[in-house]
Amino acid sequence: MFLLAVTVYFIVACAVSWMILFPSGRDFVMNALAGASQRLQRRAGMLARLRPALDERARAAGGSVVGLGTFVRRHALACAAGAALVCLPPLAALLLAGRPALNGYEPSSREMNTQVAELLQGEQLVPPPALPPLVFAQAEAAQERPLLVSASRDWALMNAAYTQRLLMVFKIMKEQHGYEMAILEGYRSPARQEALSALGPGVTNARAWQSWHQYGLAADCAFVRDGKLVISEKDPWAMRGYQLYGQVAESLGLTWGGRWKMMDFGHTELRVPGTMKR
Image (cartoon, rainbow, N blue to C red; front, top):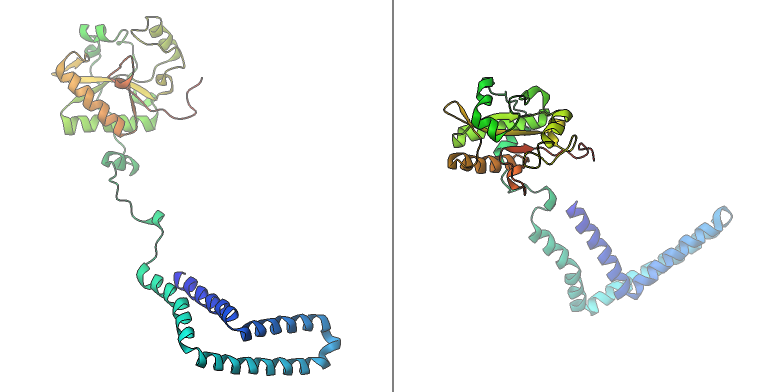
C-alpha cells in the first residue's frame, strides 16, 4: 500500500510538472479535453468529421513531441534538476521509512498484572473450608463486629465475579505474605443492613440498599492466627496484613475500605456500574 501511494505520487508529480514547465504539455492536455468535448457534442451524426479532427490532433501532438525533445536538449541541466526534485523525495521516503506500521498496533511494553491475567484466563478458585461457628462467637470478635454470629458467610450468595477476585486475594495473601484470611460477612440482607445501621455510625452509615453487601458485591474479612480471628488493627501484625490486603485487593480492581474517611480495613467491594440503587 505504501509503495502504491509513492508510485501514484510520482506519476501525478510528473504530470503536473510537465504541464507547468512545458507549454506543449498544456496544449496537449487542452487539445485532448477539447477533443473529448467535441466527441460528446457531435455524437453519431458527426462521425464523418471525426477523422480530420483526429489527424489534426495527431499532428499537433507530433509537433509537441518534437518541441519537447528540442526543449529538453536545450535545457538539459534544468530538466535534470526538475526530475531530481520530483523523484528524490518519494525515493528517500521509501528507503528511509523502513517497514511501515501503525503505532496503534505495535506490541505493548506494559507489564500485565499476573493475578488479573490468571483471572482472565478463567481460573476458577474454590472457597476455603468454613471455620467452626465458635470462632466467630469469641469475645474479641463480638466486640469488634456486632452481630457477627448471625452474619452470612455463604460464598454462593455473593456475585461470582467478585467472589473470584476475593478468592484470588486470599490466595495471594497466603502464598506470598503468609496471612490466612477468613470472611466475616458477605451477602447482607436489607433487614440486617437496617439493624446494623440502627447501632449507629460507628458500625455503618449505610441504610438498606445503600451498601454493596446487599448486591453480593462486598465482604468484610479478617485474619486467622493460631485458630483464632484477629480483627483489630491495633495488633501490629494484623495492621501490616491489612495494608498488604488493601494493596492486593486494589491490584485486582477492588475498592478497599481502608482508604475511606471512616476506615474499614477488612472491607472490599466490586463496584459494578448500574447496580447500586440510588
